[in-house]
Image (cartoon, rainbow, N blue to C red; front, top):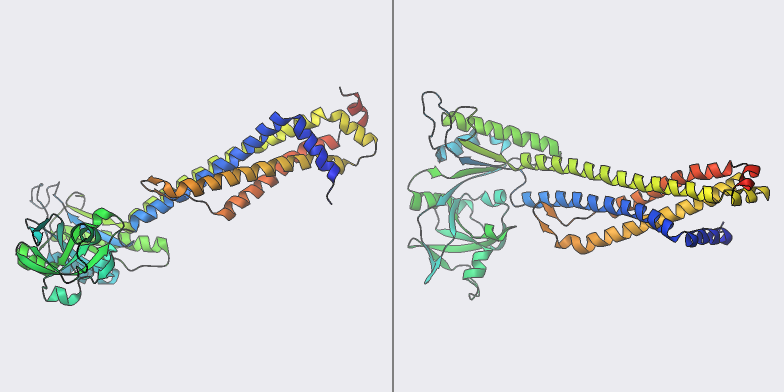
Length: 414
């Protein structure tokens, strides 16, 4: 039942002790504020990591050749590894059950690219028709290279959106236009977009065309695969790591590389890296929780100490109330109401300020591996209610001490 006299007492006490009440509330509000901000940045780190891995398929595995660093089976170190079509075909045959999409890739070197009289200084890469799914390229117009293009060594090209903006800004419909690659016309069949603009400075052509027309051999620059997705993240990561190790073992055997030579063949798994980063961000979020909770506990302890001071200051008043017939629980309620009020108002103030700051500033933060810091409102609200409960608990012991005060001793208090 609403007791207006009780609230008047609470406000009178607060008015008489403005600075003390403000500092107490500030310690509680800062605890919630720090916790929410830390949780927001913990979520921002997870968002940033997820964004980084969205650039390629989350289950992608990539292979790059390197240089041997160790002598093995009579072969000297310093050998440069060269990947070939045979390596790609054999790996697909051996590990087919663990492969969803696959593609070799070749970086076409020493070619000139022109559109009319304009020279285009962009990377030309030969890829397979499944490379779109591996690289997670989004088609904005037209289509990607298909199986028929690859089998028929078609002279077609797919360009990044940045090339379209830079070169074809005055062309109404650039699809169907031709670019010259070292004097050979290639028909533009599509444009694609990527997460980062620099990834759009690429011209894709069928790998068979790149090898037959420009490379003249079966050499490839690197290999790319994806493993089939799974519902369980840990199982998917374990499968990707197993595939990575099996693939490396095959390539090391095929190129006579020592098993412990890590510089000869580089195999990178997006899923393995994601697991490592998510584990790191999980530990950081746990640390943030720990720091935030410790800050809140410090605030709650401050509330308890202030309530002890309040009880000490009002000992004579409490004795008079008891002499006039006040029940112990009414004394407890009087102290608890003030404790709960200060804790609740401070907690909600800290919550509103921190959530507002994240809403205003979060979307504009541009830091590597931190993106749009935010926090679940229900989690933050639940934290405030836990804080209020903790404030109630902290105020109970001073209140119970007040209720146990002997009337005669209280009336003697100065």
